Length: 311
Ligand code: NAD
Image (cartoon, rainbow, N blue to C red; front, side, top):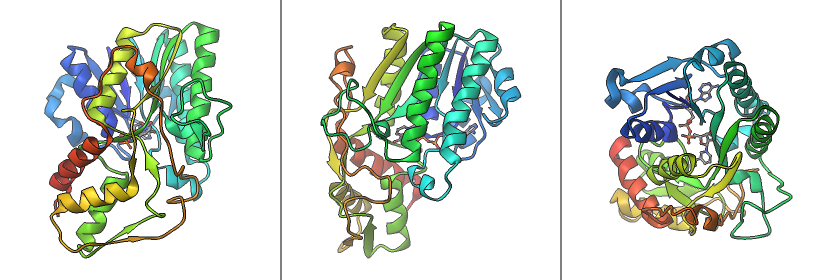
């Protein structure tokens, strides 16, 4: 059986879909803070859902019974929140990961696949940034929590003989999104179809990957590569600017004469990395091919979220 922490969330629920399609039994562990049971409703009773918090160690330990692989995706997904509440990423990221690892250790579970992030690189001076880039210097508390979680997982593997897959995600977009730039733009347009405020100067440029491609890549790596610690960037190999995303969302909204207004400054908020570009040659060398590049993933997501949110 597979355990998916954060399995009721945006990416987690897509991962559950793929694992179920592979014929695996799946248990989801989620406190439903940003996840939604409706994202799993189509599985009926075939997916077991434990509504509990990773900060309650006894609940995490109980969830490990009969588990072969833990897919650890639960975390605070909001990078911006770290500018206001300074212990969120420490608790929901680092300590939650510690609880997962310790529960695995005492239960004899030996495999963990982890949702890390390109945020660990901070403002890298090598672009596209390969996995071998270092020293890495995150500039957000979220990035720090991902890097410390990676370190804890690697140490667990070295000390207790577990195997891990560390996936450094690009920006992931798609249906069931509950946050992120496309989601924000649609909500802003819904509130006021005449103008769209963009945080920063719109020149921020990042790699985007569809959630379907992301979870397909995760499973491809877990099934296909077998070092003790398998560390991969997950992305599409190209980038898209926030300016272009704003244009695409406006095009897909069907609203005319929308004034796109920029708040100015090179970053959207403190801790926002203005430009990220992930080197994904290592991922591609395993035979993985994404089905969509960044712009196509953004357009497809804009359509899906406009459909879900309604304008
Ligand atoms: P999400 O908020 O939809 O998913 C997180 C899930 O974890 C939610 O279902 C939430 O209810 C659950 N959760 C949070 N704290 C919990 C806790 N203490 N105990 C139990 N459940 C808890 O966000 P997402 O975008 O699907 O992100 C999934 C993972 O991927 C996260 O670890 C995130 O940091 C990582 N990630 C996401 C992106 C992206 O672009 N979306 C990029 C890089 C990394």
